[in-house]
Length: 262
Ligand code: ACM
Picture 1: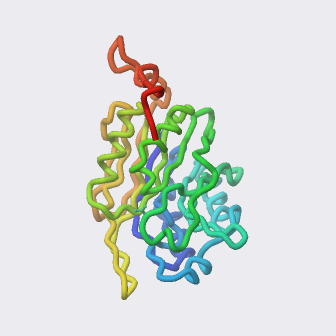
Picture 2 (picture 1 turned 45 degrees about the horizontal axis):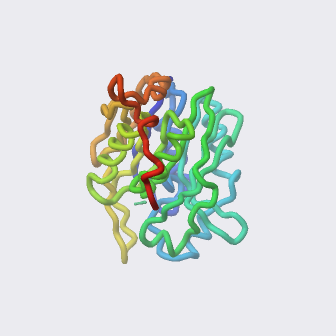
């Protein structure tokens, strides 16, 4: 199975330009799954609820329609973060789209900082998606700091966690996602954005350094902090079934849930 990420710097409020850039960068890519950043069509640094309302869209909607066409042309699956409108409510969501259309939606459970002003926390739990028999989980950015989220997905059978992000705290995400890979023995695709988003009164610089990690924590592919980049690697997702650490230790069988609280 060939999986990867595209790290780039979405332009705020320009979904058509951002989607066009994704299509151009992915042209000719041969992969089963490509993960894109959080809020990749809209940009991240909202200044008001009105901006969220203007850029959010239903799922399915125009972005999933565009991605379906792209996935069909490339014969791949795409995982992308976008602002979702559901009635009067907004979520920081991610969609899995293949040649046949939408095949999954996740709504970010743990909202970061001012996202709390604009979005509702996700209400879909941590669903698993099937890609040609391989089990995928999705977490969005700040979700990485809650080990229970990755654990919930891994216990349910996730072999790969897709992690669209707009990370701003240096090194946190690159470190924790590698640890989450090790502690759950799963693959992890961190698709972070790069660049600086300057909205005049507010400005954020994102940390890039997207990476793909293997169940033993090995980094299979990585991007620099500040460069737009597509990276693809071949993996054997079955490796995620092996939770053994020694011949006498299995990370899942050795758990002691009766001792855990909270
Ligand atoms: C984040 O959750 N976008 C930091």
